[in-house]
Image (cartoon, rainbow, N blue to C red; front, side):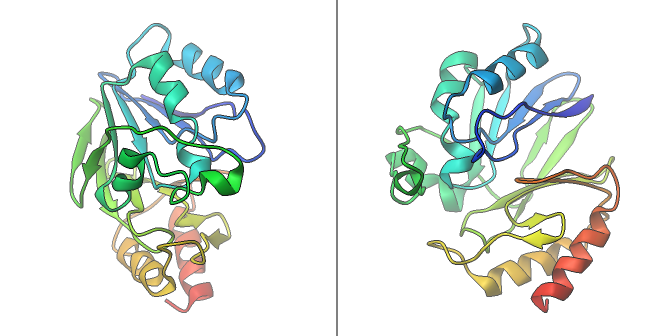
Length: 215
């Protein structure tokens, strides 16, 4: 029952996290998919001939979803999920709305399942609850394990910062509201979409972000 950061393939990749929940496995985000072999090899070793049960995308941006097609081809995840508010561009293969064109890449149409507030993914030793946290994008989500007080934040919250709100569907007011919403959770471990993750001190990072944003 571990969380491991997958080896990244590109400077532009988001963080990719592999969760071994004992009974089931889950991957958070996929990077850009540019020169994907280092990431794929890392995932292959972590799976160790097990099935990838879940692939969860924290939001629509290409640096988090661009590697999805290759990961699906290689590992055939049982379920592919993301916040319903960001799902339509993925279902339509919209490289503009996912910022694929801005990165010089493209995405394929993918039939993702939509997640909503309070949905639960039970991995056995990990139980992840979906928290809707718009602001960076309209459909951004976080995943929270209450037992370990661990939060996967996508691009909402980083160590010493927050995600931008200037891209399409971003909204500074919603981001502030999402930060306030998270203040109701006991957060120790913080696993953001970019930069270092923290085994402890997550709530302090959240409070710092709230002060910075005036939330």
